[in-house]
Image (cartoon, rainbow, N blue to C red):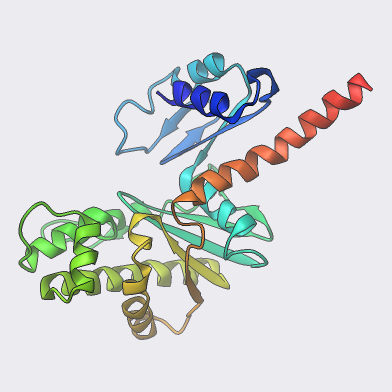
Length: 263
């Protein structure tokens, strides 16, 4: 599916397949360079199986990089969005999962093993048993909270936020709780990274108009460290534009070398 979609995009752009010199894929989890496979992509069964990325490279016929989606979103937001000019900023991606990308002095910070920013694995005290922070701060968590507060029917995170805008009390409480939990996430990032900016993005981040006030209110109670908070300017395109920025850096060099060789 990934390969066929990429081919359709190239064909639709009017660009000859031979003119494509580099490709970038964004994914949850972390790409293992040694084993050529994606690890920790819990919500994508089979995505981390051995040989999958190599097969994609072969079928595409171009060099292929694989990067964490939150990292790409952070780079996209730095290059084209609200993070431009920031010395060090963190992009917190809140959707079906929780992740964070960190850009320092214009460069991604990924840690010793590519795991920097995997804040979803931080422990979180659950009611029955210890959970992960990702279990508490995600679209699924918003729906679960809304149900506990009394909402019924087929619910999605978007439906809960829409109901909160209409004044539904259960939805308002669920959003307030989500804001409190996001504040804990921001507090952790502030203590470890000292960012000058924290950007909220991803599916839940699209409802940041409802979340900013409870996040800021709770952040004041949690910590004296209060970085500037902002919604993603790029929205759903953050990961895509981060991939474009990454690919362009490599593609320019390849195209320049080719043209220099011809001339």
